[in-house]
Each structure stands twice: as C-alpha cells, then as structure tokens.
Image 1 (cartoon, helix red, strand yellow):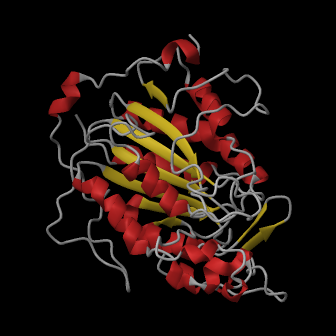
Image 2 (cartoon, helix red, strand yellow):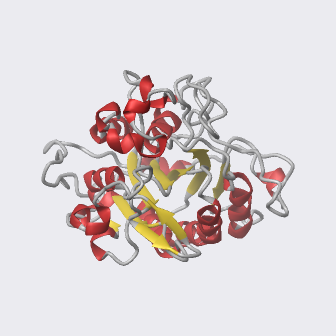
Length: 370
C-alpha cells in the first residue's frame, strides 16, 4: 500500500503499553551531565517514563550553501529510520514514529532587503514543511504536515517512509542566510504545537522527542530586544555574514533554549538533541555524545575568527566536494548540556550514516521495557 493510503490514518498507541512503568536504566540517561561553566540538572530531577512513541523533527538549513549537505542527509535517512525500527524490534517494542522537518529560516524581524530572506516577518516560523520538492523523483502530489509510521505498517515499508521524507525534507537553498536554528526548534516543538497552531498533533503525550539539526553555520537566534541585528543599514554592526559573531550579546543564550527544551521534559517527554554541524571531521574531541565533548571548544579549528578580508569566519572544516562550515560553538555548548542525550558529528563528511545511527539508537534506548 502506498503512502497516500496509509499516512492519513490516526496511528493508535497500543493499549498494553500505556501501563509500562519500568524505570529508565541510568546508564542511558545522565541527569547530572553538567560541565564546567554549564548548569547541572537539579539533583532531585525526576525524568518521565515515556511510552514507545517517538516524535522526530529535523531542522534543516536551507540557505544557499546547503545543496550537497541536504543530499548527503537524504542518502542517510533510510539508515536512521531502519535503526529506529530494528532497534525497537530487537527489544520487542511496538514503536510509533512521527517524522517532520522545518527550516532554519525564522525571519528577520520585519527587516527587508536582505538577500534570500524573502519572508522577513517570521520566515517558516518553525512550522513543519510538507510541500514535495519537484526535483525528487517519485513523490506524491502532496503530503500531510508530518509523516507517521508504526512497526505494524508492513504495507508502508521503511524505505518508502524514508523516501517520502526525502520528498519533503529536500528544502532547497533559497532560505534566509541568517540561520536561527535554535529558535526554529523552539517554535516548532514548543510554541507551535498547541491546539490550532501549525504543528498541532505532532507531539504526543509521553513521547521521546528528538530534534536533529543539519547546518553549516553556528546558531544565530536573535533576541527580540535586538531587531537591529537584521538592519542592512547598520554597518557599524559589521558585515552581515559575520554579524552574529561580532554581536553575541544580541543573541538569546544557549541556556534559554536548553530551558525551552527542558520544558518538554517537565511536561512528560524525554528530549534528544542531535547536531550535524561544522565540527572538524577528524577531531575526535568533537564527535560523539555530549558527555564526551569537553575538549571540543579548545580544538584550534573551533576558535572563531574573521578571515583576512573580514567578511567571513575562517572555516572549522573545509573538505573539497563535501562542504565548508563555520565553527558551531553554540551547538557544542547545547549538546554538552544534554549529556548522553545529545550527539554531535560533522557535516563535513562524505556520509552521515554513523552519526544518524547513533542518534537513532539512543532514541530507542530511552524507551523502557514493556
């Protein structure tokens, strides 16, 4: 059976799972995974016990430099989905997955005249995107807001599920060059999931929530108190390409976004954060789960500095034919705060399958045995 005849069904949670009360193995979750200069979780924090329900949102950079990287992600997405379903099957878990995508375009607070920032008010606003890309062969004419599959959907093959995601997640390269990755995630998972909002129905009660970023720039989520960041006429704030680096006080803090995602935990979810970003591909200190990244920001390539002409940052990775990326300092800081529920890998690699498999495995590991 094809996507069109399966995905519109409401996918029920198997009733027997609703009584699952097994505790989460603390080898999988480190609630005190703090680091120097970063906040630890409260010592009396109680993490919820999720159902075998997984809600995954990809935040995909759709700025002008991202064509190859989007294609590499799409090449690996089948591995990601197969790993989720096979890991669940190995444990006898009847898993239920929602899969959606949004872009890094969160607007420019009304400022116009910035190349490629064509929707200056809110951009895509963290809303899940579902218009099929005409350059991807074999797509359906239209899709719902997000994709859905359970382990019982034998007539909706995992490869078909992954292909449908390629159709809606190949976002192209015409999005705003002011990438506000964290703000897009906050809007997508927190602000826009209420009844009547654009992502209504995406999050389910007591699910494992995963947000996976794909980007070649560091986060530039601007505070509402500093809309001047986007003013093309404010040459005193520096060139547009490095303005976020030169005006860090105009950004909302990493802790602000950690708090926003922690709000999901407080409401009964468990949160996993994955990032495919510009860490050097050969720097072991910058790859893996958040509780292993203590040395990453000391790697020389991760030191942010302008290039000789002063209009770009020196890349943290530059692999011919693969990609060029800026140091993702804020991403490393965020992933570290999630401990072993955060994962970092490089966007400057020929494939992302290894990192995607590790994220998928960790997602399933957070679901307790029935």
